[in-house]
Length: 489
Image: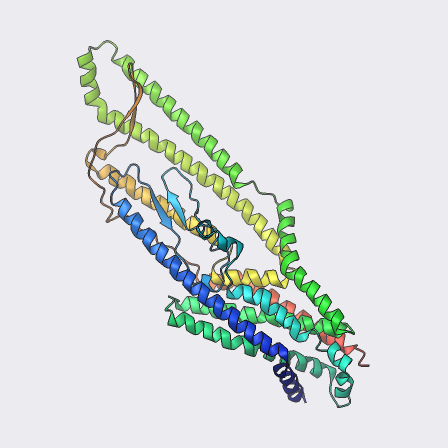
């Protein structure tokens, strides 16, 4: 009898307009989303490779290790085709200077502002918004609609258990929604293969887990629709209740959670942090300039009893030593500014992390938030992407300038940098060696971006995936409980 009820439900769905509309919408949206994602990823990769090549050429034209400055770029991840997450918002590169903090800048939307208004449609968006709404349409009248048409009482003239009936309704609805989803999804994956998107084994594993979580998310809305239909007498009422609930879960709860977390765990703005960093930097450079002025005045006093020729000879003898002292002092200031900036941004990151964790805990009341967080974690486009990239760039910064310092010392004469001096007639002056040779970058370390391991990705998404399972179970149990007391008349 259970199989008969499932076939009946599936037949009714396939024969009705809901199936055709769902299949058409899924085909258009999923294929469009995958195609746009592939084209966009290819363009990002081309831009990334060009930028890296240009940066390498500019590095090879530099003349001194003392003032090495470069840019490092974040490599696009093919998983952004399916789950964009924050990948387009956090920035594409960071400028590397010895005394400057690492900050990703130049987001994709800064170049293509129209896409900031009309965001890209990816699989995650289609499942979260469109498919959840279709799931509601499949089940909002599953019980009360049958009662209104009189078929519910007719079905129970046969020896049918209510538990079996509600599970058959659920199974039939799930198959009716899965069939129009599977074909476009498989076609989209075929497009990924045809366009030779560089997906590794880890990428395919994460993509499979994302699709499983997506189907689990749609399953919740099927069970939830079934529960509400079993709790109401009229299909128009159940549809209204489900629509309001859908708006609350998709839009209201996540935003309210973020606002509440902002009040409960306030975080200083980036402008405030940068202002503190700038004040510290200005103070340190003022101390440096004042120290150099005092040192120059002291040197001039030491030579006060000498003739002009003796002074000139003394300067020529000590020029390189003074230059090295000046460079050592400058390096010390830059190191102190860098450490302060790093410490300030670490503190900001810790405060933001606390606020984010609180917002996520509050938002997980909504299955939509749990699904969004699980999807982003599986794709690696979660809110931790910026912190991971900047952390990798900071480690590269340390290794790069450690190498630059070593090369600077090994260069003839030490290749010192700018020396600040005080002249009685010219006042404050700077000088530097005139070296026209370009640096040899062949042994310079290269930035290699790392990605979270598969086990780490699963651990990050596990909490939200388990929450989705719990929400599905609760909705299904609620549907069974509501229908067990349902008036069939």
